[in-house]
Every structure is written in C-alpha cells, then in structure tokens.
Image (tube, rainbow, N blue to C red; front, side):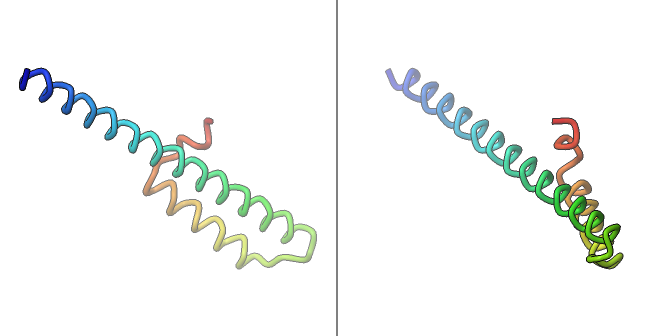
Length: 77
C-alpha cells in the first residue's frame, strides 16, 4: 500500500510541476505580447509626431530583454 501512495504522490508532484511550468509559459507569452503592443504604440506615436524616438528605443529594448530571457515563442503564437 505504501508503494502505491508513494507513486501517487510522485505523480501528483509531477502534475503540479508541469502545471506551474505551463502557467509560467503563458505568463511569459502574455508579457511578450504586451511588450510588442507597447512597441507598436510607441512607433505609431513617433510616426504621428506625438511620440519620441527614445520611447520607441526603450520599448524595443524592453522587448529584446524579454526575448533574451524567455525566447520569442510568443511571436509565433
């Protein structure tokens, strides 16, 4: 009986770990999408004359940092 409970506990732990990994992936994708949206808004504002090149550079830098940390999978989603 103890062997069965140990296996069930291991399986439950693996499920929790996999669930947390998936949540982390989804959160990283959402954050990447938000950064991409901010870059687009900064670029649009710059082109319309109400934004600055510095704001666009900052948004691009934030996006590049995110990609370096989490990858660019959100670009293909």
